[in-house]
Image (cartoon, one colour):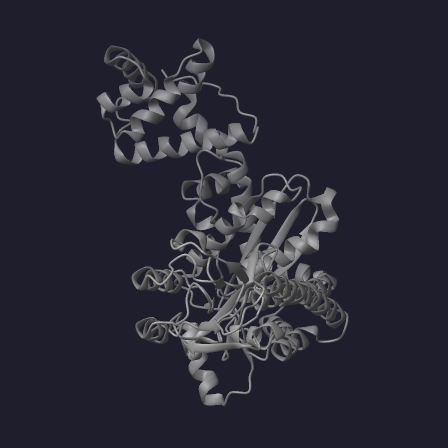
Length: 541
């Protein structure tokens, strides 16, 4: 850990070894930080410096050569050295005026020893001081961490952490949540606080403004942004570490609050279950939601079902899973209530924004969940989702729940045919489901595909596949044969057989639509393991 120690040139001048030293140039640069003290007698030093070194020299390297001396000072300035200390003596007795002017122009401290000094004593003393300060920083950091831990065990730790950060660094502190809530701890007047907030919000921080930022993260999600603004100079690495520890403590506090809130919500699962079953009126629902979240303005809702085979095995992870889901959707203006049943999670998603972009926000939330490292690291198997029909009437949520169940079932059985999570995107499968519920699905399939299916079963043929691709290609024979990987003559042979079995008019609009529905119905019935058997009906003489 390379912590930046705050040791200035001015502090070093107070050391006993500098009592006969004199600053002859660059006095306004005495606030420069010193990271190391280095003895150098060579004239090419730009590749030997890392910055913030205080250089000690006797001048033996240039021995009165003014141009070499000037080059040395310029290299020190360009390398961001903290200053140059020269011992006046046999090698150099006077500092040229143009060198003094060069140092003054760049606020570069130029210090001369008017009496002989032992450089070894200076380096030993200053390096010891640097090490002591470094150790003190580590001790301060440890002490600050202990204070944070104590605060976390108290009531209302969130506000106390922000106050502790402000008092420890003597800096302005901004805490901005994802929901737009802003907390400021500062001695600045309100007008100036608001001006700084606008700069932070617009990400238009001026170069001269000393700002450090750290995200408040939990469960791989960012919940807020924490800023410190310094008025006394650049923010050091130590101060950045203090900011980082504070952000971690805030995340722990936030996670604890979310966990407690989720446990409270779990106790109300019976109410949510009754709502899903249609047992609550609009008035009861709105009253309940206003008590849960006073700022919530419900604008319709839908049901999201989430299924995983091993949810029952990891019951201890449920609360964290729900916390994670909540964080994802609330960032997108969607309030979430949860109900657990067997290996399935049911979420009532209450829209807290506009309706025209609700589907997009919901889709973004699901995509975020599917791709998140948090979900991948958990013990859950592949999560499956189904979104029900959106309803503007909160008391009709049971209809959304039933349609979400249908969506999830079809997605599981037809993964290659249906990629959308939304009930509204089931398209033809909604008719298939209705036909199945009315008990006419098998008859419908037989009426339009029976002979084709019978032929394939008896001859191990591919007429059904050929028919499906031919319809998808809108009757284009060349494209159909390419997709089936067969020659054109083979396709003609199969089409002639299809004409014989289901008639040459199967490309007529209405008959074609019926056949396409029958194909989707047959694939769904096959995936659902629905018994199907074709029995030919004798033709009347």
